[in-house]
Image 1 (cartoon, rainbow, N blue to C red):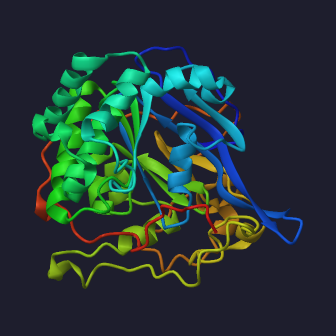
Image 2: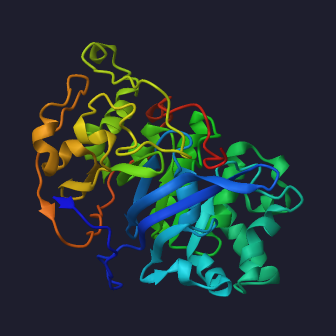
Length: 403
């Protein structure tokens, strides 16, 4: 199926509807130069992201540094103002809300920052850090607030007595637990986790991931989990969105995406994961990409991946790929899967792809359908051995759009 329009569909608030609906989200940062500081260009950090997050679901967002993951997450909760597009919390467009209305909605949408040290005020005690939002929203004051903070610390695996300490007195893993407690303080429905374990060692990563899974089950939370470590994403996510140069290249259920990747970029990422079984290394095909990621200030025409794609053919240079639904819940932006270019795609060089595509699907002249949600699977705890060095790259994307 091929979705030929990007229209926003309206949903009623029922069990089968998304909690968060993102439609055509864009965030461009102006590039200024010269004595007069004139705008001479735009950094297209996020350029047309469409995504759904369902209740009690974890959606993983992966991609190279600078592809716009963090900016997308920040814009989805309106920590950064969007250039265009819509983000719906249930049926409410958060970009239409006033500042006062948005403050009230903050109780339902929270953010866990990548760096636990810089995100915590060094001049404030843990009690003040966690309790600040509780008091601001009028939930509790005085001794009642203090009791709530201590209870939150216990829930994230810390001693209640730690409430009187300062951030510098904790390890990195403990500081991240404090950041998680702060995000939970207002009992939100949706939390953006911006690489919450990237700054931690492997053993602490496993503890934090297991904690997030336990809290999700207890509080019925929905996560957008931004990460570089593909093994962590495979463990925690129900669905995975692969992002490249400001756009989502592929979206689908975690197991299917890892076992049967569709987009050439996804195949290249997964082929880079080291296999601990040496007997399988001889049969594993590696997709090596040539060249560098294009500048988000002047992205290439047509498919943004065509400058590095090993299967590039005719329309890739000039025609922007449509969002194709290959099967239920699996979406990809690639001409190889578009029936309109089926004849030309047969001439593409697919020898370098470990998973050559098969042409299927049909055009659908209807508004964009909601992405299919999945029941949570893989409730087993994560062990240290389950995490390996499968980062997409070694560079943090904390400053995705600061180019």
